[in-house]
Length: 263
Image 1 (cartoon, rainbow, N blue to C red):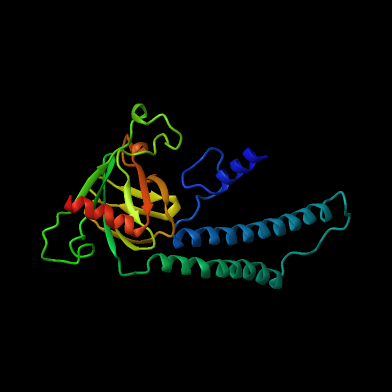
Image 2 (image 1 turned 60 degrees about the vertical axis):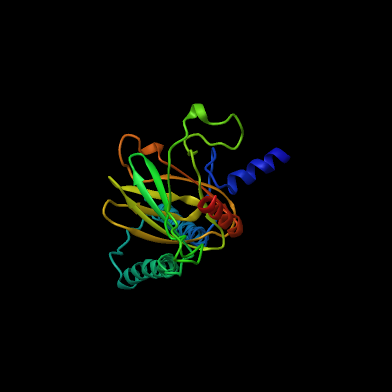
């Protein structure tokens, strides 16, 4: 029984894709929580529509079959019926549009960021840059603090450690470290062709366009290790551009940055 329960939990709540997964990754941000909630509402509406349409179709097939009736119907059209079957779908779309637009506008909401991370797509890897720690982390504009830049490449299968917890085609040589419970600003661009920086647990999918800087706000609610991939076909090695992020508490994150700049 215990292995069955553990497998069920892994299928329902996970930060990386698993075999036979039937649900979203566990939400880590308010955006993803909103997406999962909206998905549940839409599925309920679709289920109700499917049952109603199926019931009407079955009744039409049964009661209007030539085997069950000998009287020819003189019914041709009805204004009242046309108004009903036009108004009901419009009302359903209106009910779905209200939470949908609320979620879309909340995703574009601008917050004062504490940390800024610049993300640059390349063929075929990602590079990251922390460039604002001179003022945000050290609170002293007189200090000459260099920006932190590094690139993340796919970890080859031969170099992946023989341990559980490492994912094929999702591991990178370095993991991006981000603080939780902190307003983050992501600046996404590309150095060559179109890419798409996507992390399902964050509810984030933003295009990386050459010559264009896309801004995204992010707020992580829990610690964990999260994975993503490029979601825009960008060449022969498009499938080998993984994203690995480690969310840690803010104090630990500040200590890591301090050690990097001063040691």
